Length: 315
Image 1: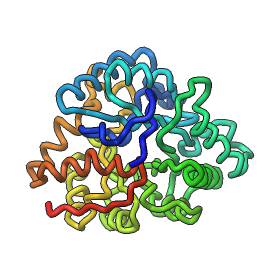
Image 2: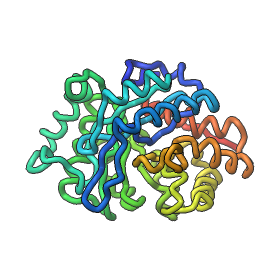
Image 3: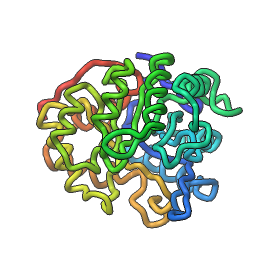
């Protein structure tokens, strides 16, 4: 199995012995005039580090896939500091979020130019840090179908993935548009098992989730704990529906901490809500230790490395 690029260097998947948070943010800035709180910066680094370190100690947290990309205020130096201090491996990302957050570099740039930008990040490192991303994401769109700029950035993500061997994680805004994203990425030549469709727990549509998984894509239930969008009761029902339909091997879970108010030190549910609240409910619904390990460790490792072995659970 290929090594995983982390912010502190290559990581052998065999060394990831505990769970993985498949979609999180450690440093980002999505502030706009209408929302001044969507930020995680130097003021919050200590809280983030403490949370991750405590989850490593209590639950064995081994890896965080950090999906802050170009135009989202990514800070790879901060990721490296948090990873080293918490002793939790962190995967950084490159790509472009959905259109309202596209930086000027997207305007007027063709797919080939955008692809070359991502490939430079992946092969030479991002900015002046030398840190290489281990995933392309969270590559975004909003609505049932991507806008014209989003089509270019998604297509560039697919082309860069094909050139470099990385996988692509998407931002499907409010869970909408996943089938169109997958169709665009696979039409560009990317295999479905190299794609993770984001935020599907915000879309109460089990048939859509089954169809995505049946094609071979990963279905991300990655906003666990954000009950102002959907309740965790709904998320559990959607997860159990995927498991019962034979697609446990295509599920990824996470909490998507995307503002400082989600940190436990500020009264939020934090990065650990998955372990402290949601997984106990999944166990109570009948999931055994092997199924939990599949969903929280083996699946994200297979997604990141491109291993196309499908695993089935009897749970």
